[in-house]
Image 1 (cartoon, rainbow, N blue to C red):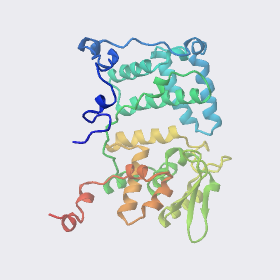
Image 2: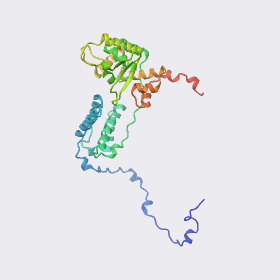
Image 3: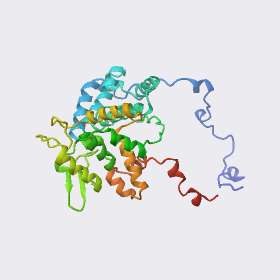
Image 4: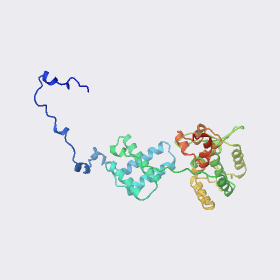
Length: 338
């Protein structure tokens, strides 16, 4: 065992440091009692409660939604944010910024969880309130720091769904000729989002002779990209534009029989009818997952797939892929070490 100079034997005597050692403060030896550990902490007032109490949430939310609109978010995204904040205005307790504390944030999430809503819906409430708090903090409003530290609720991972070859054939057979068949074929052949599908115009169909592309001028996050089109889908696009698309003043690629542009609501209603007729779930992102899975199954590169889907990271690409039991077991016997 080694000693420092001050701890060595005889050091105190040589230095003339005899007598009782200096008493240390009692607070260093004080041990909290078990009862003190069980006491609930006394809630502290907001450091700027008087100032924050002057700001009501309703006008702040309107200002926030206007900024989201200016930033270029889609109307669907803005409506989703507005719906979540309207829901909090009806069932939340805070009316001013001072009342929107970390405790109130957690209380509201627990309240919504007790209602039995899904994990994704609960996470949506968290995302919107957290985004509003972060925006208010950036704008210089007095926001409770504890509110910004609230962590996201856990979301259980679910297996991605994709169409089987039999289901794809059933969907194509059930959709009549016209925009309904064209919408299903574009979603299956490109993996684009339904909002991007409805925003396509006639100018967005690029045919260079050797290859064809669909331009997505304003995808998610206001990003531009080109999506390649297979020869089969290219033939169906030309046939639809030349024979089946009604003459109208609209420049949208997909239009109804009266020339009205197809909206996201029209496509959602179509999927609802297909669900009732076919007996299995039909929704927009299932087409996206099917395209991503089939693209990789047939030897496509993940970097090209990322660009085609419009994702920023590979994590989002992986989430779009559905590997069934056959995919997982393929080559397993030859690759497993035991």
